[in-house]
Image 1 (cartoon, rainbow, N blue to C red):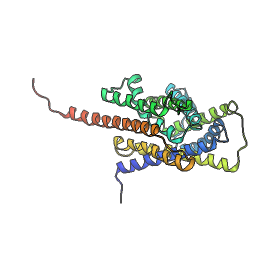
Image 2 (cartoon, helix red, strand yellow; image 1 turned 90 degrees about the vertical axis):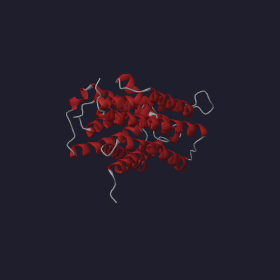
Image 3 (tube, rainbow, N blue to C red; image 1 turned 180 degrees about the vertical axis):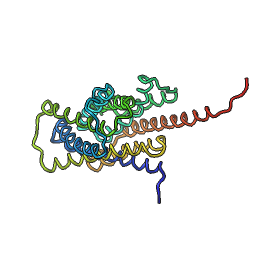
Image 4 (spheres, rainbow, N blue to C red; image 1 turned 135 degrees about the horizontal axis):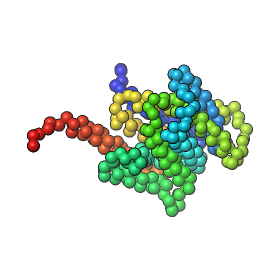
Length: 302
């Protein structure tokens, strides 16, 4: 049976989130005995090679002078900072907790677009943003017994990733996504190399570990490609909520692979964050349908 464009987009988004979350679980396993910088470097080298070959095959490469664009530079900084903070935090807190905090990213992007890009955001969406960040505080639980300072690293990831996404909106549309992914993956690899020695130095990598690193890089590529494909199918307001399937994957992998079972704080905060994000998407859809209706309304004589 042929799938509609909306269902194809939803399927692609779900596959993308599965790719990213399985990648995260592999990295979390590796950081038990290899430092975060070394994992960033090795995974980044393999990912850069894979994405470069794909970009070359699709003729998506561009001159290196494109890096002089300030928005491209900001995107790279956001990706590097987000990767570093996420991997450090992930190595110390449960996978599902990290994933739940990350679900605040669409809310952070909406807030950033209002503050820095002057995009209109009504009081309802501001209310959803505040509720979402309250949910993050419940997960982080500052001042309580279960508080981990490494959860704040994931909050930092949200801020870096929001800056990355806002910068992406300002980048010239003529610059292909695959080229941006290539230079970003390379920058993450270089940053990982520089962080390897401050984080404990180089450790021998077994064939099994390198196999896992290569698998993580492949899953990263799957995530990148399917999220691009999802955005080119159907209605974004229908497809975007399937981004939250990553939280379900994180819960399952956390329990099966790491023996991490969510507590009441994590579940409550996660539900609030995801609910706030879904409401924000709903309001975006309402605004999108209201504008054409307003434009097509007949004019009345004074």
